[in-house]
Length: 479
Ligand code: MN
Image (cartoon, rainbow, N blue to C red; front, side, top):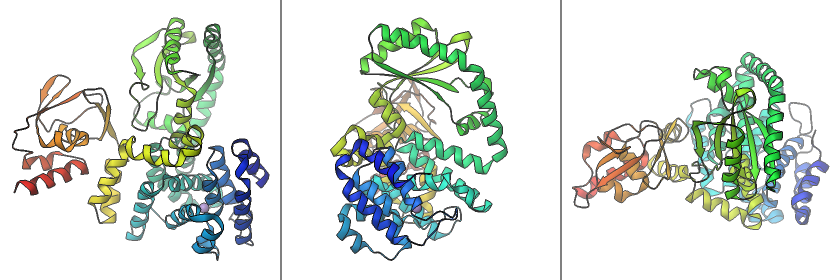
């Protein structure tokens, strides 16, 4: 059980100078929730305390921790925005208010009210991404304590978690939260399968232990030998990840990244040196190498991935990255608290809107659909479901919903490119404009500045809201 002392000890480790306000937030929340209990029988304050603790583990800033402590007070107690603003300032109030606005929800039923709420959850990203991060921490603690709810509620919350919160966590790169949320959901949705997989996983882990330790030791020796500061960890795929692979028809024995070595070094160039050293120790399998350092994933994940023949000839994935990249890999945007210290908040919002590709699409969908149900459906279709990753001519990775065509690609890059497009090449071969893009396609758009503009028929050949809107705009202008 997490106590107030645990929370303060955590915060002291990274932010010893701002404890006073956090203490005040704790005292106020405790006072307001007095007499309320959770279904577990614990005093209610244990919930906001845990939420704050989850965030403190990510080194959240002062305002975020305060807002986490106060996040249920507007809804469940008799304080109001004015009181909170007076005591804690405008920023904390905005955060608490933002979380409150998206708390009364019940996503699985299809009522308009719930759609409106889901929309608010998703779009609060554009207001202050910390609202979503607090909400994710809130959901994580609720999922961790789901055993006290009815079976119906357990299933309902788990479905909702998989449908909305997991994709959101993925989008901001918060992998650690994402995988815990996934496993907790699966545990309640398919308890039998979950237990079986867990058992299997433990068996394999036990069985592979010696080989993995030996490999870790050998890699470490080589790096130490070259005087490269390093840290190596073995990470196991989460149960949900294994479940999904099996669903896709894979066999447990050929999931090559069931275990992976996370190898962290200090400089970017050292990553490549490390890769070379590992390949000297263990033969790589040629088509299983990915350079996500030069080509980051669209949620800013960076790492070198190489699958090698490990001890006993077993295939195993190695992931090589710097310590900072590793923080982003585990915590995504929330790692900014650690990396960008004082300026984290601005940098988070700025990078989210400029570097994270899904953000622009989200804004576009928000702008285009006034109906809440249509908005939610479009987000699920366009941003939360299967996507394809293709390459622009300069090597940038562009992410699009499955079924997208070169027209979608062109408009994703720029309106100009779409408006002057006359054809497309995929992997150096000419294709029709309604060709369906596949993973890893290299896309080159052929343009003619004197073209008559996009064809009307293209409207039926695009998947993304962005392309559709631009086409409609162009048509209006031309008529
Ligand atoms: Mn809560």
